Amino acid sequence: MRTELACLPCFFGQVARTLQHAGVNGNRARAITRRAEAIIEQASLDVVPARTTTVLHRMLREQTGVDPYHTVKKTYTRIALDKLQSLRRRAQDSADRLEGAVRIAIAGNVIDFGIYETIDLNRSIEESFRLPLPSAEYRLFDEKVAAARRILYLCDNAGEVVFDRVLLETLRNRGKDVQAVVKGSAVINDATADDARAAGLDESASVIDNGSDGIGTLLEDCSPQFLDEYHAADLIISKGQANYETLVQERDPRIFFLFKVKCPVVASFLNRATGDIVIARGQD
Image (cartoon, rainbow, N blue to C red; front, side, top):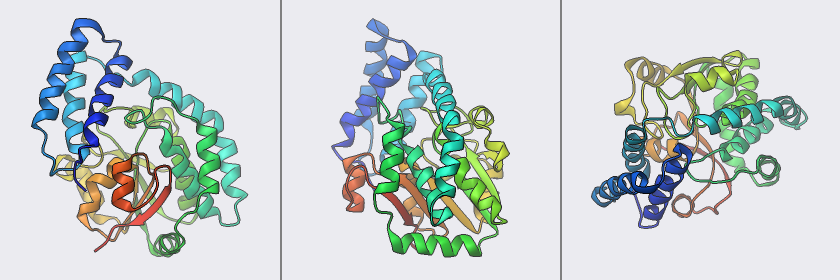
């Protein structure tokens, strides 16, 4: 993947939404936006969008002096926890419990304030069970899960990790050694260790952080501890578009990407429609 011209309005949209969440406006907001304009102007179109947005959000946190998404992360963690028992039942009632848990996990990927301004979780859950899940890729995933002993699960957003718990518990109940990975520090509404604890994620898997505040998984920016676990894993489950953007070029057949297609650039790259649900294997 690479940055397309269609990514540029999205970059500016993320800046505007972040300043709104941070409560910054007026002259201060204009000054910060000018800094963002300079970053975007100098950004290479040959890198994936997540690398540019990583630089943007580092600047935004530095300039605002706050974690702009702190409140929204707490809110959606609480909303998701209220749904946890019904999500578990939905997966358990599926003819294939693993597939049901995968669909639940993908449904939670809609909790993405880097892209969306409003979120309809109930609609996302119903769509995730209605839309087709690529059958060949799912069957291969099922086989690889059965064969794997150590599974690394790359989480995405706060709140979403509650949905991930359903899949993590399904994997654990199959006797798998599962580690869930969150971000090393705040970036957009991605889950950190604090968000993981608030979501009870440690009740469903062991939890580590990747030592990075990068968007997606920027391997060169991650901690040695995370990299040791990454290289030792038999299977890697990668949640979200940004993890797809930053890891697909690794061409690692251990990776399965689970996410909801949220933008036309990714949709075009995958030859899918915006809104589709995806399970895709990294290619060797």
